[in-house]
Image (cartoon, rainbow, N blue to C red; front, top):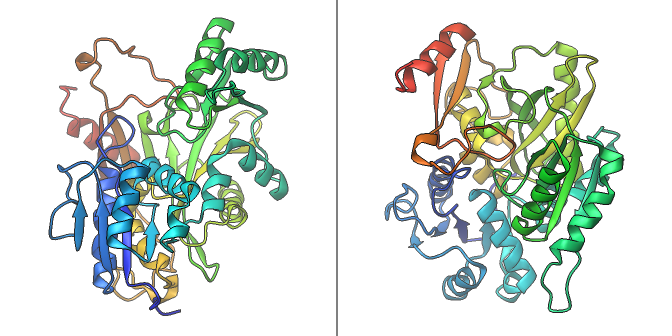
Length: 418
């Protein structure tokens, strides 16, 4: 399908300030998307609150707004610029949450702005823990044993966290300790953690419900020690789907992906396990309803008996997408932006080979290793323990013929005196 001609102007929401868990990966993807859309002749309106990014360079977008990324401010910009479409998948969790707020406020309907890349229903199904579990049950894919707890509302509309914690405590018998607490609609596992005892459990349930914009947490059975894998999937509106890269975490479950040493391609999967994950990941995208663009599906495998479960999926360009793009040379953000405006994978060229279309899955004959960089010495209040909440402040990536070569290059790049 050729590109859409019914839209002329597209708004991109950036990721905002660089914080732990949301760094320059989203600047990388946003800058790619701006270039790709302007290349196709669209007018690009960019909103980002961080002036120190490449995407806010005046050359990259037709109109750049360095303003706070809140629904109210973005609504005023929409009123002034009147874009035809909104691409929320390039700004990390900030972009998705702001787009959902604008939809809820009725701003997008009022100014006739279409969400492209991922629709509201798909974002909610992927991010809302309850809807996601129901979707996985429909597919017959296994989830970790879990209970969803939402804090009840007080009469003034605020969340009653005390009552929420009591509900969570009653669920403890089913799950058992240790338990993993994951807040809904947050980035980098903010507010959650692994509870080994009752006091920790109460603490994480309270902070998790407080950190979640919908005051909802998922209490998972502990998968600590399981192997963790990620599949980077790209899908177009004609239902072509490819796996750009399978990423294996060297650190087991219980350590946030952003804090884990990761390797691409996955090295310890059997072909049968890889094919099950590949088919399952594509089925997840179809069921969630991600029409176009890149998504990331996370899996856990029990090394003792091979039991395989789906942990979660991100219906957007993520931190791992940036790693997969650099590891394979497949520009996920650029391709995702072009797919959002109507192209299909077979119509786009692979920038590296120049002769194959983007519908060919990349294959790599080398090993890529990513090692996170920590700076606990700069944050004296933080505990130097790795949990499900992200703590690394940067990362290095290296390429080698073997895992050993790649790992040693990465360690040398850390410049921490190893």
